Length: 241
Figure 1 (cartoon, rainbow, N blue to C red):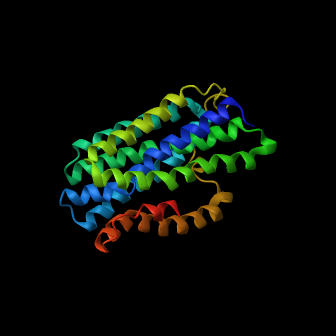
Figure 2 (spheres, helix red, strand yellow):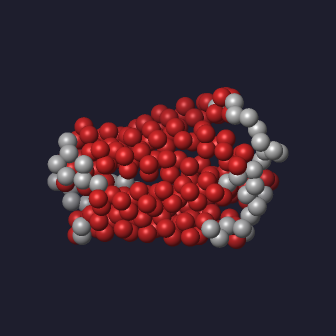
Figure 3 (cartoon, rainbow, N blue to C red):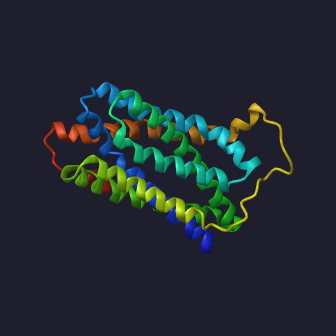
């Protein structure tokens, strides 16, 4: 199981999640510093998720019929470029536009990454492999938000954006080194069908994840602002715990 490709996809996942989680608690503070109200902060955070959700079903179809590598690299590249561009986003329209683009890149890259893991792990150890793979974003969640908030307190927001995009760039470079044959599963072109966008067997598990992440999304978006209002100087340990 511990092949070069499996290690590379795990490390790629680690670095892209470090970049993502570094930004997660900092972005609401950045938006607030621009004088934008809290109701718009929720909107700016939410449009990212909307675009990430909408892109996943067609990306799943494309991964099967077009292959994994190009979609994965394109998704990572979009993530890097949008995060780096936050330094110039000083209006609501700019922020919403960048969040929509970042969501597209995030949805495409994370969907492709999970598919690649399923490809490179032996089928007899797939559940074990997915478990190890899932450890890496959890490690990123334990470390990156604390670092991001610490940097935001001491340095300009642009430094956080630069480091976050730099971690994404490192993930992109590592992803180019994955050598597994990531060919399409289709034998020849397959016409698109609406049935390709949904798998009924996944509905129950998806519903559980919906309610779980509905709670998590609301908390993680506003926890840094809430801590600021309550006079808590360092909310980082919350994420580590």
